[in-house]
Image: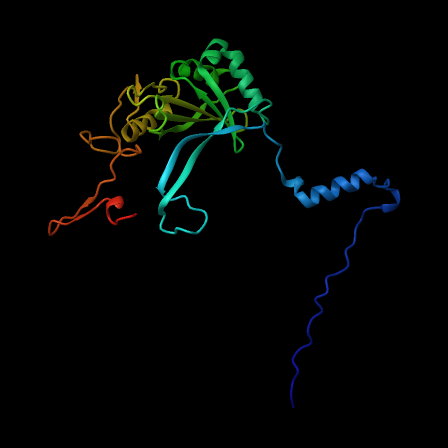
Length: 273
């Protein structure tokens, strides 16, 4: 006797029901129907409020020869590639979100320092950056921390960036600030200095938590934070030559402790033509 097994359950979904009283609802207009369809098709309901129109990107450097291929024609990354490095340009008002409020409050709290020190306001990928001249950095940070309209009382650190192609502004120090008082608002300050004069004033007395971050940026990039209470290397030995995260720092090889062998630098291991 052959068994056909248990009966297959019915997988038909149940009919959709609603508690909406259609009899008491006003009829939907043609404009409402169009707006609803457009929102469903474009996903407008999940898109955050728009930010201000960003400026035209500026090419600050070019990468060649290594990495950056998006065409799948050179998986090794070595093929004479020419890739521009783009930096977002100055944004136009309205900046959107809380950005206008932050910029206006900072300008009102320190008008002279703002006029002299803020080179441009950048809004990119939903983030606010103020490009600030080093001479006015400290004058702007005190109201950024203390003014009740701002209250960016926390810094999460300072990062170094090196663009050898940007003559007169090769080194960048990028500061990240957070306002706990105002619901984790964030703002970034970016300060540049030339390779020949790599000095930026320390802000340890304003934001004590940035102490070791300034030491690390000095160690890796060679930016001298003037006024720091103990500016010494934090990762490399005190007598280490150079600053390893600069783009012009030699890659070097790896010494091997037996048979006198060495592993050459990556750009010397094969001949790429």
